Image (cartoon, rainbow, N blue to C red; front, side, top):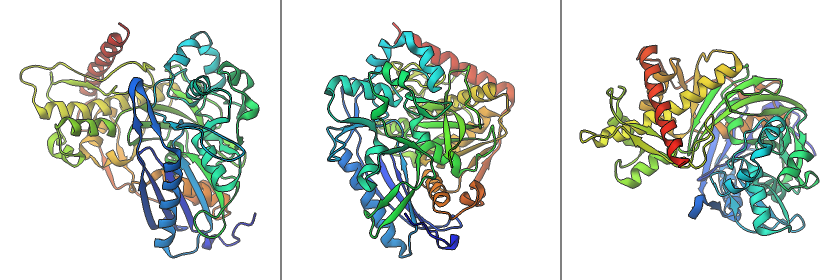
Length: 487
């Protein structure tokens, strides 16, 4: 496969296939966005924690958004990069490429029955994969789907199917593979032992490749284009936000909130119960990260809107302002789809605690914003303790990062600056940087990402003691919610 010889000609079509939409950008060598298009997708919730997605709709959205961006750009495209949802899985036919049912979303919780049955192997699976045993990750969903649907077809993360449909290759990138619980984190190969624990076969998994690998060509967006970049969404955002040094961290405030911190070139462990993953693999060399997840962030704001407490996310700053809640105000635990790291309580559910007859609508909304910020701060603190490196700053991206009230609360609780990333499309820009490296259009990660400045910086406005008291109140509330779930 040929790649362009001149770095000056490397415009990248970067596609971020997300939970509720697919975004496509055409990105110039300096990081400028020449064109942008998007297409909606619709997760389908169901009983018992089910969340499914139509794989054909996902693929159609990729092609629609990608073609729209290419038409709008009116400029030559040198390569394609693809970002994916990470833990969403699909059963499909290798011969025909046809899906054999709905995709099981990363949000789906039905695989709790699988994880419950593997409790005795919890520590060994953590040792192999770096991931706590939880239905959030791909392997429990894959095992649940295999038990329900039988032996026909292959079951993979959704990116392997999309890449196969676009290029014919059967691959997944190392960062996505590290989100399954099936990868040996240290040698980045499929673990026969981990696969066997879930009733799966290592030989049936896709080839694991670097994030900057040239894997094939696609004609889905016009003429034949090489696909030279693959990545899971959160790790792509970490790359775009120049978190290249150990300890550098970002949080993506999307449907969920995801905190990642660079952990360097050796597979880390996490006494605090965080996930340890491949951040990216470039040219066969892995960089690792620690990862914490909050399953409902913007989804909690959408829920407030559905309850009629707000008209939309644009109202948050007007309701919450930049001031912290009054002492004794309600505390909210954003466990509407369970609690992830460091609690790993999938059956926990969200709650306001400390309500009184004096509690107002504004107090409830503010509590949700501070609850999200509290959980992020809890994760960031755990990462610092595990890595032995203080948090100097947190970089923030994602749709909900447009809320200044949220980012001010975050700075207050972290007692560190929070920097708002200047683009809403960090994942796509990270994928573009991987693809640029794979296409020969950049000589280093810094060169591939380019220079950028924060759109805004939020400094702490409360003292360390007050921040500690507020985090203690949140931790107590989270423990109460977990206790109720166990009854």
